Amino acid sequence: MRHFYSLNEFSPEQIEQFLSRALFHKGNPYFPTLAKKQFALLFLDPSLRTRCSFEVAIRQLSGGVTTLEGQSLWKIETELGVKMDQDKSEHVREAMGVLSRYFDGLGLRSFARGVRREEDLLDQTFSAFVESAKIPVFNMESAVYHPCQTLADLLTIKELFGGFLGKKISIVWASHPRALPMAVPNSILLGTTLMGMDVTLAHPKGFELQDGIMAMANDFSRRSGGNLRVVHDRAEAARDTEIVYAKAWGGLARYSDPESEAKQRLQHSNWIVDTPFMDMTRRAAFMHCLPVRRNVVVRDEVIDSKQSVIFRQAENRLHAQKAILEWVYS
Ligand code: CP
Image (cartoon, rainbow, N blue to C red; front, side):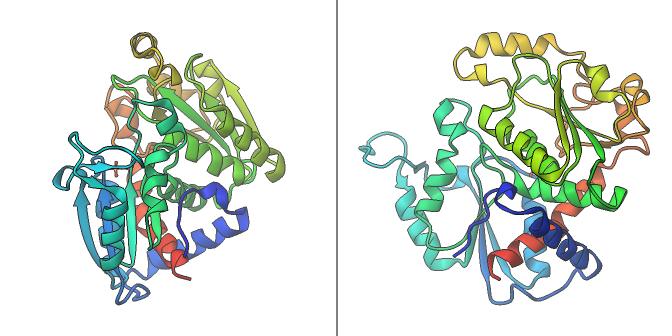
């Protein structure tokens, strides 16, 4: 039984195979590889793209799909050994035991809770569901990784640039009213270093990604013949880059000192992708996973410009996820 958790479990060659298969599906939308398979998609957090792209992908591959939203289910306990006398009515053991009897696979968006550091950084919610599952589980965004988004992003880059080696991408932090999780920056950093890109990660001090993610990204970069540098100056990130990948995320201090993290995050409201920023690039493509707050993360004139490829990224979720679903059952 195969679970799909993170792209860093795959080699560059395997990722290229996913991308080839995704391109095949882009040209052949209806292909019955999931006939007679039934899927549950469980969202513990809101979603527009992931929900719709998975539902359409499964239907186009002739599978059946049921979408479950956390707030419409019994509140689920994920810890073992607790006395369940509070608000949680169902344990993940029973929930997953039952779902495993109805479905052939489960997509899970566990997201980050943003309360306990260990719970998020070790992806404990996602792991609790996987440990109780008797069917394949695929990651629709956990606290640590959003691999479906990154595969779609890599497909977008391949379509635009023909390949990855040495192509310049800047992953640029943005200010935001909420301390957003790190799953997207973690995943795009690992995906692009794995594929040998020339990667600049730009953020203000205090918004570092986890040490383990940075160590993995440095290792990928060395092995793939790519390059990775971290800068704290926006202009350095913009200069000469071919892709601007904007994303807001909260600092790790959100768990220990949320007030000071929020103050620091809001102080950097100049970290917004605007025309002067894009003018310093090599006519870069503008990428964002969406949803995005206009005129907080990116100015209207950039997101609405010809350089913006946000809709191609969103469309590619559909094609990339078909390749993932097929891999789970191959
Ligand atoms: N990019 C992304 O995962 O979007 P949703 O949160 O709407 O699914």
